Length: 375
Image (tube, rainbow, N blue to C red; front, side, top):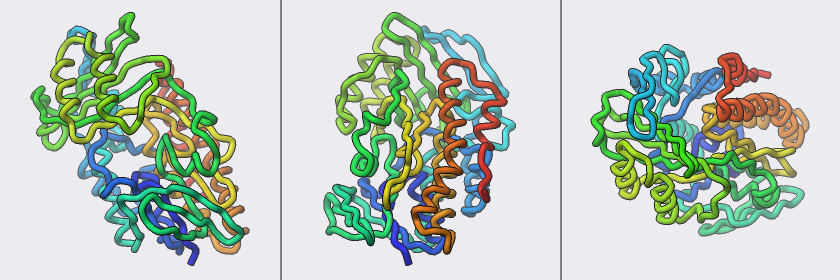
């Protein structure tokens, strides 16, 4: 049985692990965190990605834990309401849509359970340190554990992928910055929101800020996504204290409940910060190494399709690797790239359209359905 190491235990990595085992390959997942990471914002599963959840056996459970928002209001920088809707939210789209908005931790929890049920091996509290590819496999050095050799390695380790750096080169070759930074965190629902989403948009000489706050867990908690526009900012992506101070500094001038939100951010146990960016690469595979999800083709949160790309990309890669007698992993990687390229292009373009305010329903529909799972 061929062995595959997957770096990263989020949506792409967990989906890939499940489907590799279903297709007859042995999957091992290495994840720096001590367990599947909690927290995170509400994410969307749309179009063909819903079929992946269905085939994975978790679609109805995912529907059962979807967000229950009744609508949203848009505020200006001083907290005055500009407009409202009871038909849609900016985070999840139309409320009568078949698409699903649910918390990232709920989706990864379901995927993790399915992967465990298939007998996937997990190496928590560790990460890839080096790759040495030979004619018969890839010798992997880990930060903590002993070296091991795998037939294939897949980087599903996000925007700042270590596997991509080791196998393809520095991040700067592939990253396309979109001029904004965001943070996501959870807090008690001190705003008293009742299944209602609040957006605030502030434009100023300081660069402007936008954020979204909505309740979850039967209105007992909130998830907040705060962001600001900026030219590239130098920061250490592992120094959360520095990141919190940067966000607080950039939003200090914003009104409404911003001071309380910033204080909640400082106290949050599940703080996440990063820049809005895309990854553009001529190839997602080299030798015995492949990339999936954000590691290979991050579209950024502006697309609203990052989770769907991760689900579909992992499913397609596992399907192609599971095909017997079709030229080995080189041919499987080529089919994976050929099938996914048009779908990725549609979704990365959608992010650009959303950023400029020009995204249409037609563009979204193409992005949601732009690939056949059985292609």
